[in-house]
Image 1 (cartoon, rainbow, N blue to C red):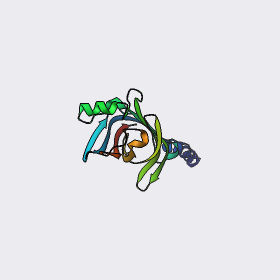
Image 2 (image 1 turned 90 degrees about the horizontal axis):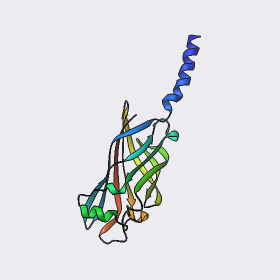
Image 3 (image 1 turned 180 degrees about the vertical axis):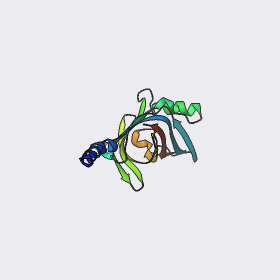
Image 4 (image 1 turned 60 degrees about the horizontal axis):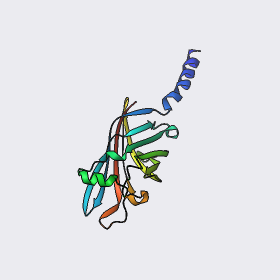
Length: 176
């Protein structure tokens, strides 16, 4: 009888261990690189806000979404930052946030990946974002890098000097 009760307790408790887990961000780095006039320009966004529900054993119930305020952009040159917030680029007065929302998460080799709706300047494009997930106890790290075409989102016009493609790097540390 004790074996049956133990087996029932184990069966009942297994779903609790595989359900998705909520993570609270305590540190983040959102950076980008783009070629402009032959030089690599780097920049950062700060103040990431995120809803991270993730368990590698239950990707179907996992969901990741995040946003940053456009006005937090920093490239190291104040005039350039101001230009980037203008209508031609991010139009920060009208479009305050850059957002990403997962639509599907899956395992890809030893890493993870997801299809995400990326929303910039009111334009939504689906982008595959590969990422690493590591955790130790109640702490986790999400780390990813992906490329997007700025013109797909109406950021800047045609330019002989500036690349259309840029790389975005994300590093998020969270606690459960």
